[in-house]
Amino acid sequence: MSTTVGSTTSGVAQTQPVVSVAGSSSADAAGGSVIDVSNLVSELVAATEDPQQTLINNQTQQVTSQISSLGTLKGALSTFQSALAALDTPNAFQLETANSSDSAAFTATASSGAATGTYNVAVTALATSQQLLSNAVTGSTIGTGTLQLSLGGTSFNVTVNSSNDTLQGLAASINSAAGNPGITATVLQGSSGSYLLLSSSQTGAANTISVTETDGGTGLSAFTYGTGNTGNYTQEAAAQNAAFSISGVNFSSPSNTVTSAVSGVTLTLLGTTPNSSSSASTSASATPPATLTIGTDTATIESNIQTFVTAYNTLQSTMAQLGSFDTSTGTAGPMMDDPALEGIQNQVQQALYSIVDTGSSTYNTLASIGITTNSDGSLSVNSATLSAALSSNFSAVSQLFSGASGVATSLNTDINSALGPNGSITTEGQTYTAEENSLSQQTSQLQTQMAALSASLTQQYSALNSLLSSLQSTSSYLTQQFATLPQVQAQQEA
Image (cartoon, rainbow, N blue to C red; front, side, top):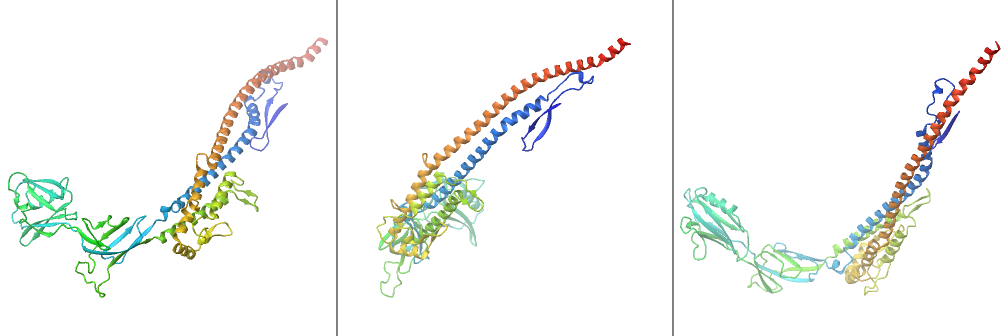
């Protein structure tokens, strides 16, 4: 006789003997294990655990999918916000360009807020740096001592001794000296001897070079230079400021890069302009003055608006996929009918199709500046219409996006709210996380319960196994005794 328990752990019924009764042989009579306790307990525990664990696993898979989908939505909204940053404040529309009519004389760049307009520019002199050429040196050594070199208000010392008392040694020491503010020394080999060329890297009249001997001696006096002592060098280039005028106002600058003349504008002076001297002819035949023109950078703004449309189309596609339902396959998107998704979709649509108070009855919607909706929900831009709107009423277009109730402003506010600490998306994410943690705890509790059940069943069936083993031994003994009874009776009758 045998007893079996069907195992469905793998989905296919299996039959395994878990109880066997010993035969009547002398070997069986010795008794032994009757029940396969380990296998029987394992199958009974699995039959109890598997349905519950399958339910937990299915719920966990669903919650994990929801958390992942919510993360996809959050990422798409954050990416979309990056495009809004170029449109959601009035400063975002304060983009200017600077153009020079004479790029050989100067170039210019404009930062946000620069005043638009056209300005006459005359450059009479560029800022230059000083360059000094020493007298010819014919000897192999130059002497020893200490020189102090200054550039503008900064000084440093160079010591010359037996290790560097050559013109090349002096030049190398100057170039490598600590605290050197920008004096470069070069040795030139001429037909009359060697020359030391000192060049300043700093422009401006204040940045002159001076060289004095500070050791108390005169060993290096041939290389000194300064006020009242200019005989040792020839000035090849003077240190001077740039001189220029803007709309008749004269300026002087120690640098050819000028940031303080026109607010928000950086000028880079490259050369002098024709007729830039004070005595220039003002006749009709004179060369027209160079001009600096500051205007609104509509090209960049148009590009930012196109980027906004492209970013929205990406967001719209993502949201549509998350909340979709494929009728041909009966497959639902992971966030179909999800309240957080539907909520942000409604807010986005409301902002896109709102009428904004721009101060203009002509340009107060996205459609009015050329941004329209396609059949699939995406947006398109009519570049000609957008360009015309920016040219006709730039302020209205700016207000349409960046005003207090503007499209970009409203979208940014809605997304910040949804993604904020108490927002719908954040709250839903916290709910899913709590569910995931709860399911993990259920798995842990189930495993604890099954361990206890396994121990209990093992104890019960082990005791039963001992009893059955004892009964099996008794049965075998009685069987053997009954088998001898006919032989005894036959012997008595004989």
